[in-house]
Length: 227
Ligand code: ADP
Ligand code: MG
Image 1 (cartoon, rainbow, N blue to C red):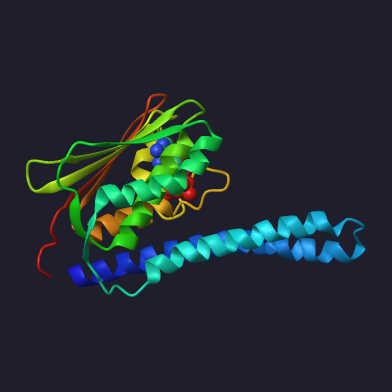
Image 2: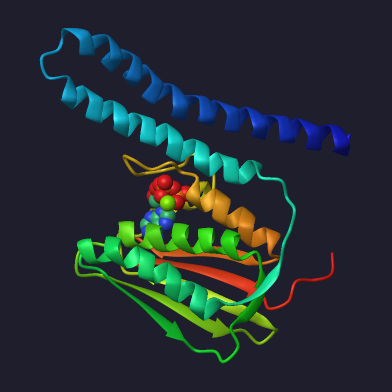
């Protein structure tokens, strides 16, 4: 019976995911079809073409994120310096932050930041979570990335923002595929990030207060257990 239930649960998850994907792709497709019909009789097609381009970009973005989930799970763990990695990520995200007048800073409170991981996968986690923090923070706010060491051989990473926070009724939905409160969100970032952290035998936690801000904690072991 346990096996049957597990299978049923899996199928339900696949169904939910498939429905989400279909929805995410059908909406932009419908609008593409509409604009395509309008173009021949329009005297200013450039405007339609721009909207169509942004709809195509949206489909591309969603499929790219989903492909990450479908990637074969060949694990290639390497030792890398997390401070260096985070500095690189912040360098890239700083353009977005500066446009919104948000300060993103890094606070290192550990001497050991060498960690066994899949670097490009972890990078994805950092980009997703720090982006969310920047998006939630109003102009003049700040985002702090803290790196510290726990008592039991683990590295703790905190991404702290003083943005709008998350209403408590939304907390259980975080990480659910396609759950988003943003007009142009995909609702895939947290799901993918949680999955990657679990693949690293880590922990992922979100604490938030409406109007005060949000802290995402990611705990990662320095060394991966033997598989
Ligand atoms: P997306 O960013 O595309 O909406 P995510 O999976 O990254 O998808 O995030 C899901 C939702 O979680 C967001 O739409 C937002 O409502 C909420 N969220 C995530 N991080 C934060 C944060 N730092 N502050 C406030 N809300 C957040
Ligand atoms: Mg996001």
